[in-house]
Length: 192
Image (cartoon, rainbow, N blue to C red; front, side, top):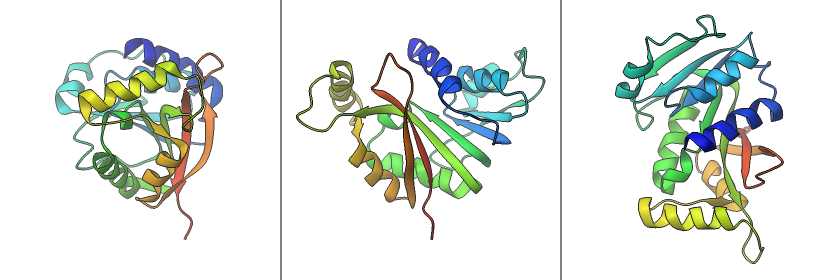
């Protein structure tokens, strides 16, 4: 996962402008590589790295160069709740879970979202059936299914999943020019 995270970090700050946000929540942020990279590149933004208590405890007292106290470590369980923010990064988390678990995570994010907030799901979007290519994405799909009862998703599957929690896809942004399997899926609450 470290190599995936490293590619994600660089692509994310090159492909997306975070200046419009005040507080970014990295859901399942682990050791904080992604949120720290975003904060170093966007000095007017603060962030929360949200993960399990035991992960947060191991990271809390480590110095954060270039962030100047703008990163908060919060422990918890994303199946119960998540902190409030105006942007959520969910990087390579949802593909680890079956649809019902993803719905619970997304419901908790939806409940915590501030007005006008966005969710940035960074994950694989596999091609429609019959399209060639994407060998690594399709192999990962099989691996997720066999090991975790989870899956990689097509656009229609992502949109159906978000629709179940009252969210909709605003855009699909290719994460980088090298790996077109990974996207930033920009999601917002449906307009009523």
